[in-house]
Length: 251
Image: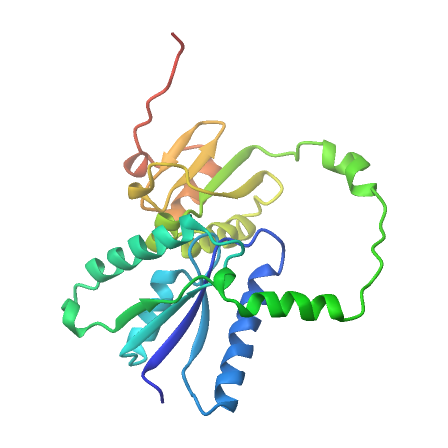
């Protein structure tokens, strides 16, 4: 097994199934490397929004025995945010791997962004040379009344999926919330929305419950269950995990 591991790192993928495309790309890259005699494992991870997070992927590669991890930023166009948070997240990961001194961790390096590779021009030209498909469609979704109505709900739950909350374990918290809401029969009364950064990310993973405007900090699977069982089901705020908020009341 090659001691070099490769991670394709993407930003949050908004469209359904988009994250699977990144994973398929990782599989295709691994297959091509294999044809060239390189058995480096290739995986996909996400800086924010999706799972696995970059921190989780770094942990997995390290635990698998990697001596070198190469990060490949895949975002188009080049994303300064991705570049900055790759480095910050790596720094956080090194600091939190308290079971290993820094010298015992794999070397982590980053390639130039995918968008800056000269072969991208050739790829675009190849696409233009292939047969094209006429585009068609109807504007129905722009007119549909279904997209003009606020969904019925008693509680609106915001789950931060920004890069810091992702590094702290937001994916597991979000999954636990969804599972417990379904198990408690509260799906029709609860509107769950994943968000970008909610700002006090050092307190993450963050979950906010409206209309009470209750901010929960360091939400793990256990606290997610308490939020569902106590706050959403019984109307009792989980006071020992509620953050203090500062409200603006006007001039």
